[in-house]
Length: 606
Image (cartoon, rainbow, N blue to C red; front, side, top):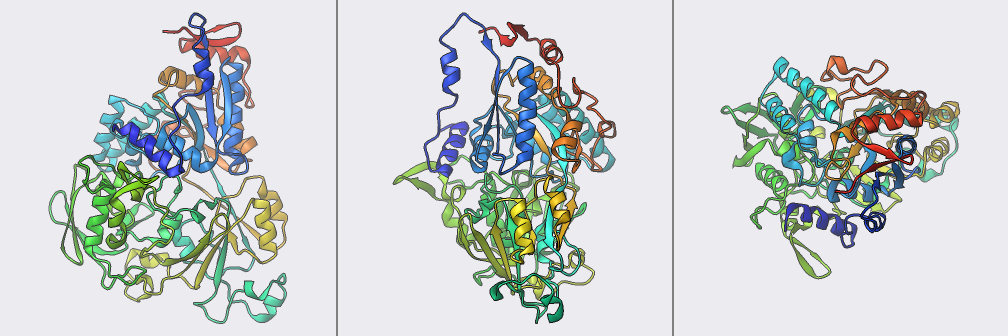
């Protein structure tokens, strides 16, 4: 079975249905007339408006302008899990509008675009894009550090802008809300560490009486600084169905896996700092010796050892553990695990990592993956059984919902109800509560010791519903980003606070470079010229966002000449106020080598 077949099979299994035949009936019908030129058509997939209205409006903006260019265009709202399967696993799309989960440094661009990842599922080159020049630059940046690496990363950004395997649109601000007085301080629950350090406010009884009345069971117990419950609103309810850390269609970010699973290290600003690891040191040019903290345990009480870490790296590199002789890497964390050549455990508390080629600036990123309990996951590496038949080379781990997870993180799983709620409780045997974290450790500044006992995620339908629940005292905060148009009503709402934070999860248009005409970079460049970023940020984002032409927009990695200054320096928008004239829209495609016939963009049949 070839790799692309495995991607399609995996997509079908994860959805509980057979893999759909590629293509659509419209295109099949169009082949009947072999003499007439075929109108160029593009389908744009995105999530429904009640999931992400911004994405839908971006898709419609692009579709309207493509129609003016004579391109037959349709916007296809697709349920989020299905969309991610279509894009990241099955490759069944022309274009899509969505959000990337965020760049973990320059090497994230390697997994996103390197041609060696074309056949792999996940965010590993979902565009089927190949370029020898870009491949060489991606390899070169991995071997460098400092200013030399930055120069290559800037050259990479320029090359990607020219080729347009995807078109970056903007970085949105993330809007969340909280109930006034719910927490001490002003922390917005974005990352697992933000959530862990939330502190329910210890208001006295008189202050409580002034609040909106709630049922007794909803009241936060303020009698003990380490007791009580935090209730967070969740619009994206996928986690109530699936908590598998390697299930790419259920995991946009590491929010839930970061609460349940620890890694050897974590990213803290621009540094990689110890977490489960107590420390590490280089034992050679490409060998890192990692020492674990003492007395680490899993949520089920089993000890955490270096052997669990060895298993994790081998499993993430090949989820079949080489049973079939054909590696099938996990669809997440591929960039980090591809740095590791081998792992070994000389003792229970020491791990040796042998790396592939790379600089010491890059290699420690391999430590930021969730460590999995071998005694739970090893049995999931067997072939999955579907309809009573073992499916060749597809391990159960890739389609398992992990509905009773065993991790090591600061919270452990209690229960869940699909599309209703998800409940965790504090893990009191976590090292953060053991008193063994030294004051001079970088993580001591994260103040990540949970000061409450239970963490409850409540599925909610919208930002408007969140405001009502916050005012009724039934929620403490929202963890899902809310739509921009909710800000005004939230700001007017009594006892509701609005939190606006920058995001590294950028909106973009992705192109399937294995399908004509999107395999032509000139055609992709023409599409990019029909996108008005300034208009979208103003009208759709309501100014809660920043236009960008690079996935490193606003960061120190961004090429200076590509910083947003009102228009794209390579591919400026050809209209104004979001609209293009038919003449201008047609011209950009004619410059790309296409022609019009009776007002439609056509290409001759081969």
